Each structure stands twice: as structure tokens, then as C-alpha cells.
Image 1: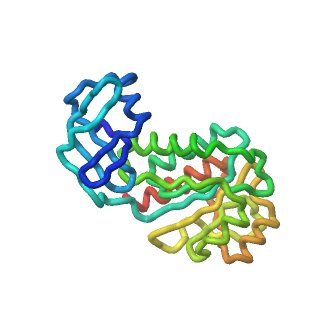
Image 2: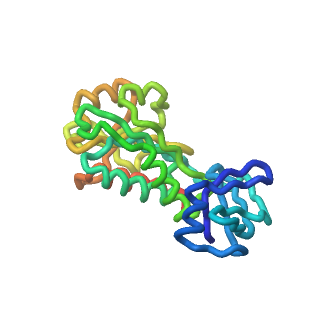
Image 3: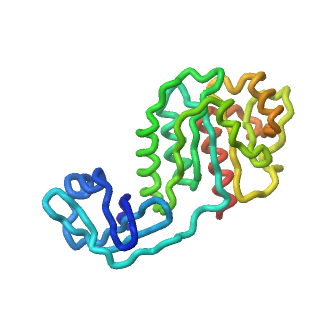
Length: 231
């Protein structure tokens, strides 16, 4: 399936401008080829490619709506790493495994404060198309940890940290739910003060095993844990 991103309103389908350029200039697709367009909100249009100069469109044959989304939902709030490539790796892999929402959180030990969220959103779209997702994940603007917690449901929110002297439950002992939120800290982990603050807000701490995982690895690990619940 050749899947592209665009807008779908009723029977009207408009392929995203960047996608059109990719179709015409990079892929050099020919008019009449089969093409599929999703809006990332559970709709999928299928039809034949139309080429008009440097523009690409679709002659719609079928539109499917309300396509099934992943369950359970997973929201990972992760601190950015000093090397942004590692967070971009996490985003790509987590999206492929069905994550529903990603937030970039700023913590006490976060070294990188400036994040190109638009670039991460584009990577999320690319990974969604690659893995044939019809529901794209939400990529939120970066936010301070204290502000992030204001809208969290503590019953389904967990923090993964490496402080062995503090109480943590095993990941396998988390009760089943239709949605989860996980907090993952930066290099150097959350501070003990932050973990205390999270505990005061009824956020339970979890262990991801005996190994010490990098930030991006911890994120991928949790995404894989949730993916296993989907299949």
C-alpha cells in the first residue's frame, strides 16, 4: 500500500503539499497508479493518482471511516536527551508500535531545553505512514513537569526511575487498563525531589527491570510492553 497524508472531508480529499512534492519529484509516480490517503484520524481514501503539472491528486474510489485504533492507549511523557537524535529514534519506534500520545517534559536535570516540535511531528507522520497507521499520535508542545501533572489522572499514571532505594512496583504488576501514561526522565534521571513530588501527587513508581536503561531505550521498552498488550 502506498500511503500518504492529507485532508479528508466528506468525499473531498486533498493530499498534503509536501506529500504531493514527494509523489511527483521523488517517487515519480505515474497518473493512474493506486494511491491511498489517510488524514491520521481514522479515515482512509483509496483511488487512482491524478497528476496535473507539479500537483498530485486522487480520483477517489472508496473512503473508509472509523477505522479501528490501537488499544490500550499509551501516552509517554519523556524528557529530551542532550543528543536529540536519541529522542527522534524513540519517537520513530514508539509510533511504529502504536503509541497514541507523546509529550516532551522539562525536568530539573534536563540539559536540552529547545526542542523542534514541528520536526518531531513530521517524523511521527512519516513513521505512521511507514507502519500503515490510520490514527496518528498526538505530539504535544514541550511542557514543564509541574505543569504536565496538572491534567494527569494519577490512577493510570506511572513514573519509571532508577532510584533503587525508593519504592517501585514491577511493570508486570500494573493493573490492566484501556489507557496508561508513563513519565520517563532525562540522563541523570528524575531528582529525588521530583520523585517525592510525584509521589505526593499519587503517581506510582515502576521498575523496568534490573538493567539501567537510557532515556530513549526506556521509552521504547514501555512502548513495546504496551504493544504486546495490543497483539
